[in-house]
Length: 388
Image 1: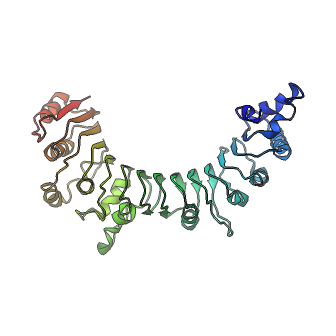
Image 2: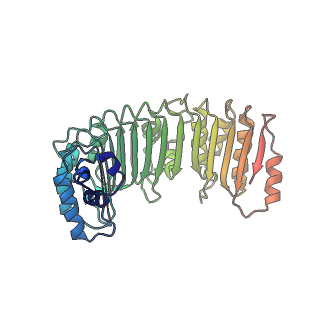
Image 3: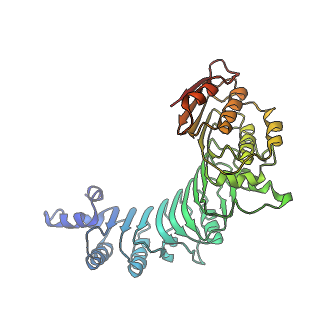
């Protein structure tokens, strides 16, 4: 019965106690507790949650808390009550508009395997011993510090899935996770240091207001921007770079050889300003070090930056070859010469290429751009150019 009631919210589950004597205490054994304040008054919701957590008799394997009002004092009490039940999964969505500081007792839930938190402040207790069984960690709309996030991640030795979205207070993001396979990072930071040798899928996006791409790197340390962020990702299969992160990487793009060769990388997704030749050079450097790439998706993003390092690009692209590339696409194409030039490079580099898809968003004469694209020489006899 407890498993059946776990599909209901907590109020509905408690109401089943009036059905018969058989159902009277069934809700006290629910393995999943779902707490949503919904249309409750604040006082009634507090009373309900206190009653449920104090009278519950069984094991709580999963808990779900989603509230739209402020429960700062109550949340600490509820977390303490839940921590005594050694849950394996926890979801906390705090939608009152105020960041909660997560109670320290949550970090004593040593059996957690899945943890998702939204709209919170994270400060680790001094006695934090880590989540030894945690495999999935998702944090959204949160604030913390460099050291707390570094320790939180590194003290999760079997972590395989990590998502950090829209955060504040973190200047240098250090991710040391030997088992990590999936990573999503969207936020404002100045530096990122990845040590995740088993990573297979990564999405990296930098907040446009971040300072990371604005500073001028020290001349002898330019390669560190690439080495620290991508150097350990030797097993990666899919890499997505969005937002301003491409510009962040381009600070070290003078190097034509990356600090790692991505032999397993088969799919790359990039947001790129084709008019910024420094970003184009970074892209070429990345592609050159992904010898088994099969799919390349690009999203064209406008930029006021103009020709830079053209000589470096020419020198690099003369030796480029992408023997396994099968499909490529350019979304939000404006039909600019910068974009057409890059498509021309792809056609000349890729003997196995079958399709280049251009999603048109430009205001230029479509027929003129189409004529230019169709006239481009190609090394693959099967290569088709499709404009939508």
